[in-house]
Amino acid sequence: MNVNIYELDRKSLDDVTDKIKIEDNIGESIHIHIRHTRLELSVDDFQTFAAKMIDSREVLKNGDY
Image 1: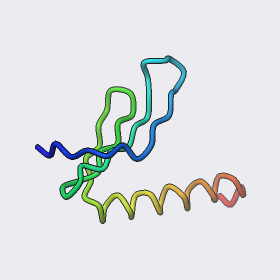
Image 2 (image 1 turned 180 degrees about the horizontal axis):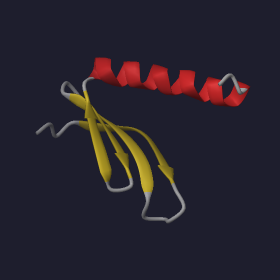
Image 3 (image 1 turned 90 degrees about the horizontal axis):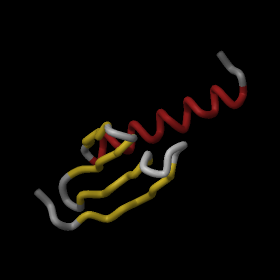
Image 4 (image 1 turned 180 degrees about the vertical axis):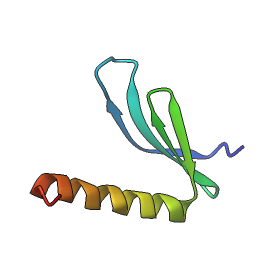
């Protein structure tokens, strides 16, 4: 377990206890916490995931589906 954790971002959701939090476990992985779910991704997988989320947001925004 890596003790060097850098919080990249945090966003509160509807309930003050619910959140989205993204952490860099420096040298190991990226953790994405969404309410009670945690995704653990390699840095490369996180970059791919983030790029696809941005692409998906643009499709939704433009109505291209």
